[in-house]
Image (cartoon, rainbow, N blue to C red; front, side):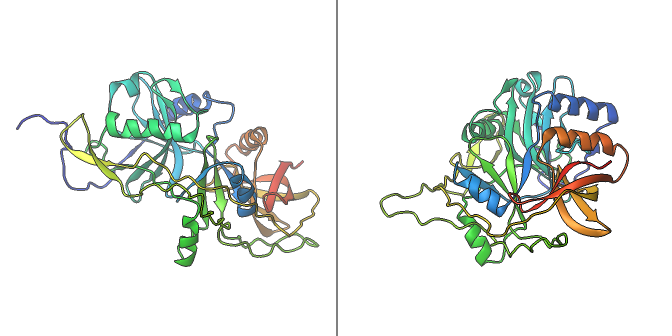
Length: 347
């Protein structure tokens, strides 16, 4: 049989990813953390806070799937995916160009082991060049070049994991999801000008509040989308992927469109409910999936989520947590985020 770069199997293979050993995990973590003082991929936001941000920039929706993390390429090192909270890491055998390995690269990718899917969503470091500070549309172009020119799919080599590109959708699409009853409780919103995206809570969580604190009214499922004036049409990009022949082999694979949906500015949606609360001692347990997010209990009653927005406090909480499963903290109601916020460790 003539040698070929094509996949050695045409059938789907059950994923059998291997966990990275401790030393490799720590090496990957240190490298990612060396990229910036704050390498968090996402930040929590309720729909009201997110709507204020939407009015200031161009944004793109992305449905969550699996766990967000970093796909890291280092010289003479296996390709490793490590989650955003640096708790888990897996070796991801991939067939890519030597230039990706030799000069180091870091991509943002979501791993869904149950669905055998690795979804590429962003790129921060490409072949040794730091592009994290560039506009998202420019980073997206680099990511598409990688997927179509420097990566070759091979399900067997990848141990059953499918590698696909993310599909970003326009903000107005959320209205269709609402009418179809398909709105997710949590959505990802990517800004054009920022590497860090928002985890937007579209449905109001059931959160008991402290005594004498007004109850938050029901939050709409999605922010209001403005009508586009007749004389000014919003640009629309086709969502149907195009099939592109990959130069590295004879087989073709689907490459997403280069254009992204660009929305008109969204009007501000402000909350009418006001919350006042003094610092209160609480018990905090790290959320199993979301970074810088903790489940909190006050006097034995669960109060829902508490978000940590400050990077220094985030590190202090992680250091104090150690091998423990919970922390004693102080929390206050954050009106801007419509949720409780951890302000400090409790004495």
